[in-house]
Length: 133
Length: 83
Image (cartoon, rainbow over all chains, first blue to last red; front, side, top):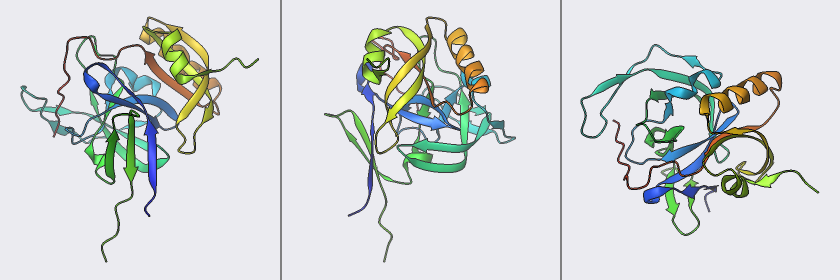
C-alpha cells in the first residue's frame, strides 16, 4: 500500500475545493485547480509572506485573455497535507474583484502525486506514485 | 472551558470576515483542525497586516489566515487556466 495524505477542505460556490496549504509556515486556503500549470499566490499577500522574489517571469494564459508574464516568488517550504516541497516557485497573480482567494494549488505541485478529490468528504487526497520496476 | 474553536465553527461564526487564527490542533497530516481567533474584520489589509505584525513578534506561532465566508461570488463559475 502506498501512503495517502488526506487534506480536508471545503467546497465553495460552484463546487470548487479550497484546501489549507502552508507557505513558509503561514497557513492559507488555496483553490485546487487541476487546470492550472502553476501554483499561484494572490499579489495582495506579498508583504505578509516571508519569501524572496525571483527574477523568473512565467508566461501564463488566463482563459480568454492574452498571454501575460507574471513575477514569481521562491517559497522555501511549501507544504500541503504534510507533503513538503523545498525551494518551490509560485506565480504571483491578481484575482478578479470579489474573489476572496489567496492562491491556487496547481499541477506543478499536485502532478507529483496521484490525486483524488473525494466530493462527499470535500477532501483532496495525494498518494505517492509507485516507482516503476 | 477552551477558547479555541473548530476551523469550521470559525468559518460560520465570522462569516464574511477575514480572520487570523492561531492554530491549536492539527490532524495527522498537519491540517489545521482548531484555532483561536487573533484578529478579524472586513478589511483584509488591516486584518492580514495585524496578523503579519503578530507573526513577526511571535515567529513560533502557527497562524492561519483566511476569508471566513464564500470566497467565490454567487453566480460566477470559476475557470482560471494558466499554462
